[in-house]
Length: 331
Image (tube, rainbow, N blue to C red; front, side, top):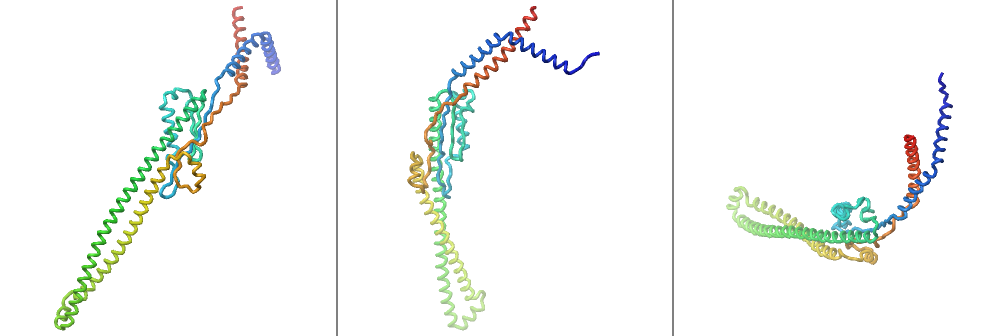
């Protein structure tokens, strides 16, 4: 009868483990040698690894005041980041071949108007040159966008002024025609009233005219109603004209104001200017906040050495077992 006692299996496992440990201890020289070599190689790699540098630049995206006194950005930050990725990652052949460039060059948006740029490489000089190039590109790009926006607003103002001027001229013509109609009606009314007085002096003619339709009194009444309508229309036209002239004056003042604003678009000391004039309504140009910071990326030298030791230990055990298997097969 076969004995299936679990204790027997445990005892067999303990015997096998003891034999394995005994076998490894007997091969300790090979074990130590392989582990030591791998650990030394890991240490050499860790200490000879080229240091990496992280450069950081913070850019403030410029803005300007709209006619409704709302603060608008020269360019939405998302559009700017997309453009930077296209031009400095995907179209830059010298960088696109670099492994992990998308991770090495990072754009972060802070509070909608601050753009943080980070770049990591093995050369501090390369980092500084690249970030300076990006900053210069953004400043030039926003300068052109600001000028284009100035031109757009200026053209819009000119178009509005031309439209309003044409409307005012049309109203002036309509007012002149209305004045002529009023004067003509006044003359006709005076003539008809004179005719009515003459008819009143001759009863026969007065009765004869009164039998005709419309009567002279009705005609005079109709003319007076037309006169009232024309005068009311003249008042409305005058009010519309005054409103348009006021709008035209506002546009002219805004045109002058916008020219002053956009002439200051390249102001270099915007932050200092804002401190001196807290109520400043002029636009802020896109600029680098502070300086480009370059720091060495800290590396954990102990971790590669520890991983090398673990790897060397497992590798030495595998080598020992393979070596033993080869010896056994030869025997």
